[in-house]
Length: 164
Length: 117
Image (tube, rainbow over all chains, first blue to last red; front, side, top):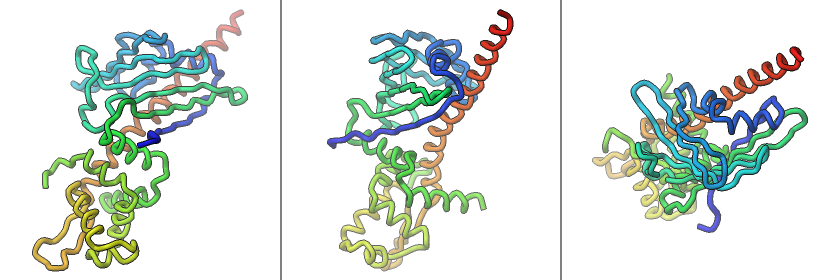
C-alpha cells in the first residue's frame, strides 16, 4: 500500500496557545483531562525527543496502560509520539480489545493560533503496520473521517432499529 | 457463528466499498445474489465472494435450506463495530471537553493573579 491511512481530528480551544500547550505538557494538568471519566495516572512524562509518557487509566477494577515515546517536540508548536498499548512492564503489546488495531500509532499534535484561540490538530497514522492492521485502521478511519456515507447511513438505520 | 463478533473481520469486511454498497442494498430488505449483482455490473461469483466475506464477519446471514439463499443483514455485529468506533470517538470528544474545563480554570487563575498585582 503506497499511502497510509490517517485520521485527523481538529478542535479549537478558547485559550491562548501557550496555555493550551501547558495543559498538554504539564502532567498534572494533562491527567485532569486525558481519558473520559476515568482516573488517569501518569507514571512518567518527559516531553523531549526519546522521552516517554507512561499512562495508566483506571475505572472500576479495570486498568489500561499505554506507552508513548516522543519523536519530535517543538515548544508551543508540535508534539509527536509513537503510541501503543502496554503490559504491566510498559512493554508494547497489541491492543487487548482488537488485535488488528495498529500496535503503534504515530500521533502528531500541532498547535496553531486562530485569533485569540488555539487550533489543535491530531493526526494518527499506523507505524510499521501489517496489511491487516492497515486495513482495520483504514476501515475505521473511513467511517470516522465522515467519508463513509453509505456505511454510516446503514449504522444509523440499524441503531434506529435496535432502539425501536 | 460465535456470539462474540470478531471486530477485525468486521472492519476488514467493511473496508471494501463494494461490500458497503451491498450492505446498503440489504438494509432495504433481503435479496438474492442475482438481485444484488444487477446494479453492480458484477458477476454472480464475484458477488458471492463478497457475500461470503460479509457472512464470515457475521454482518449478514443467509438461508441454508432455500435454493435462492437470500441474504439479509444481521444487526448485532454491526452494532458491536459501531460501539467500538463510538468509544474511540467518545474518548477524544470527552477528553477535549474536559480540557476545555481545565483551560477555563487556568484562565480564571491567571485573571485572579493579575487582579492581585
